[in-house]
Image 1 (cartoon, rainbow, N blue to C red):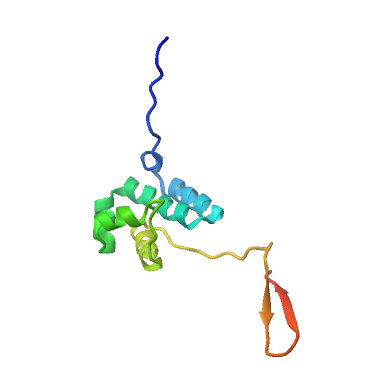
Image 2 (tube, one colour):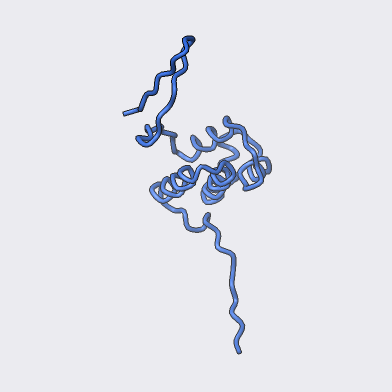
Length: 115
C-alpha cells in the first residue's frame, strides 16, 4: 500500500489579487472572531511579504508575525497600519438585522432600527 503524502495548506500562497484578499478578509470579519481576523491579516501580510509590510508600517517584522497570528492580540492601531500597508481600507456598513437601544435619563428607553 502506498502512503499518501500531505502538506500543509497555507492561505498566503493563494492570495494573489486584491479581490481575493478583500474576499478573504471579509469572510474573517463576518465570522467575528478577533483571533481569526488577526490571523487572516497575517496570511495576507505574508502573501505580500512581511518584510515589506514591516517597512510600510514602521513595525518590527517579528512583532508583526506574533501579533498577526491566532495567538496574537494586536492593537487596533497595528490593524489599521497593516490594512493601509496592504492597500485596503475598512468600510462600515449598517447591519439591517440589528437594532440598538438608546437610553435616556428618564424612565423610558427608545428602540431604534438602523435603515
